[in-house]
Structures are given as C-alpha cells and as structure tokens.
Amino acid sequence: MKSFRYDIYDGLSGRNVRGVECILYFMKDMPCKKAAIYARCSTDEKRQDVETQLRELRRYCEAFEWSFDEFFEYDSGFKGEQPKLQEVIKRIKRQEFDTLVVYSLDRFSRQTPSKVNRLLDELVEQDGVRFISRLEGIDSANDLTWNVVRPLFAYFANLFSKNLSEKIRAGIRLKREKGTYRGGRPKKTIDEARLQQIVRNRNGQGWRMLAKLYNEGLPREKRISFMALRRAAISFGLA
Image (cartoon, rainbow, N blue to C red):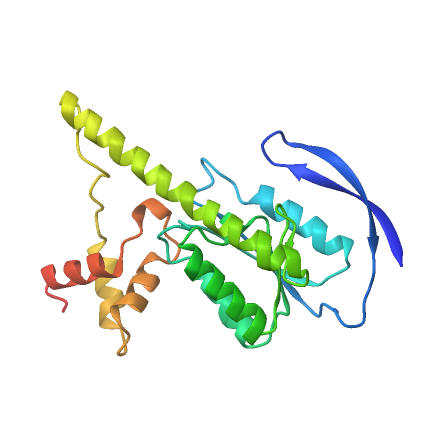
C-alpha cells in the first residue's frame, strides 16, 4: 500500500484547485501492463491546446507508475473521423494496451450516446480494456460510475454539441434576415499536384484512405473529405 497527495489540475484557471489524499492499492487482479492516454481538441493549437489534457493524464499514469503511450489530435468529436482515436482502438484490439485514459468523456467523443456507450462497452467487455475518464471519475472497474455515471455524461457531451449547432444555425438565420450573411466557410482549395501524386500511387486504395493520405500533415482548415477529394479527382481528369 502507498499513499500520496494528488492535486486535480483545472485547465480553465491554470492552477491546482484541490488536493486529495489517495491510497493506492496495487491489486493483483487489476494490473496495468501498458496504458494509452488520448487527448483531443476541436480546433488547432492557435485556439485550444491538448497539452492541458496531456499534462494531467501523464501525472495520473506516473502516480500509478504505469507505462503509457500518448495520442492526441485536433478534430471534431461530434462529426469528425478522429483518426488517432481509431488508431488507439485498433491497437487495443491487438492487445497492445490494457488501459485507456482520457481527460473527460467529451474529449473521447461527442457522438450520439448510444454509439458512444456501445463502443465503450465493446472495448471493455470484448477487448478487455480498462477505461478511465479523469474529470468525471469514471472507471470501468467501478460498476457505479460505469453503469450509472458514464451514460449521463455521454448524453451531456452529445447535447452540448447539438445545442451549439442549433445556436450556429439560429445565428445564420438572424444574419440572413438582416441581410448581413456572407456565406459559410470559405471554399477550400485543393493542391492538384499533391492530389495527382496520391491518386496515381493509389494501389487499389479506396477514396477514404486516399483522403487520409492527402490530409496527413495538413492543418485542419486545409483538410478535405473523401467525397470532396473524389469530386476534385474527377474534375482534374484523374478518376
């Protein structure tokens, strides 16, 4: 048995807001061979920074002396593809990690509660991973937080995104009524040379994979969907 004082870091205020005297029980039935820590922000580091989340997750794993790998990305948790999260899931299914730690459940996903809960149940029950969400204190090893608290926060995470979308649509309607609306997001330009290189070396790969290759290393505002990539390839005479 080992005790230590653990402070909870508040990313908004930038300070430790409370300290908890914790007792660590290194139980034989709950070892952690290797953990994956996952962090996500919706926009790039100019507006948000995943480091706030990663710092807390590192401290948590180090307190338990867990070995871990870090994964982070800037993508929408409501309608984004979250390629880094998909990579983590694939590696979990290959038994490379037995614990997944996130800062909060809405950082994991903001999709519909049924989809999020189904994915989490599959990871825990079928793939044998332990899931921990730090901010809400959710732990799949704790029946109460897993079966009661987790579904509630999955619902609230999705509700926030739906409400935000409705506020945006309401703002657009108001601007249209006032005659001040100038359209949505600016049209994205596609690098024809980059697209040619990827399409010509496709080796039978589908459009989703080609879009992933095209977007690799690009900032979020320059990434395109696989449908947009396909349309551009057709317009350029590449498909």
